[in-house]
Length: 262
Image (cartoon, rainbow, N blue to C red):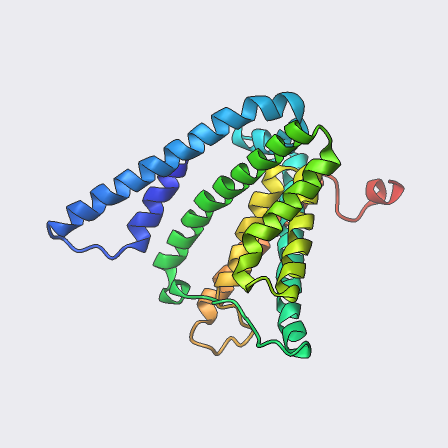
């Protein structure tokens, strides 16, 4: 899956010219794609048996999705939880812009959309890249959390250690200013809670929605020249959230006697 996603990203993301240099570009992509695929395979094969034996709740929905359980209610629930976490996180990040100015710091907005402005070709490449980076990053994060849990013997101690480690590693992006550190601390605390409570799949869904909110030129001004690109990002997020919501109902009506009785 990782290699296929890498191939799609390379095919749509690169500018291809029919000459001999294209062969070098193809070989370079083949090497990187094989490397990422082997890394994902080794990480999952090394991690999955131990986590399944000692901490199975973090992989239940992920395993069900990999085995074709696209209509499993647990899969839908975790995807919906990931969508909510991404929306909450990006809202908190935008509010931080105002906090910077209130405290006298210069505003530090993110870089925002870049190659997504080029249209459909780069959108497909960006989605494929997200399908690689999301599982890879959160598998590595789950591996670190599992190691901390094995060393510290207690789940709460492992969670606290993971939050502190995550905050120190990624707080450097804001030069360790107080506002940036608080924001990173809040996000890492929410991430470890979601990882323990919902599992890996919720964080992968969070990664995909967060990437769309962060990197797509979203707008409500439909006269803008990039409104079509914005609509694509909005529809992608809406489709993922609707899929999670509808699947989590397990066939029950949204409004009905069964729901009201519960």
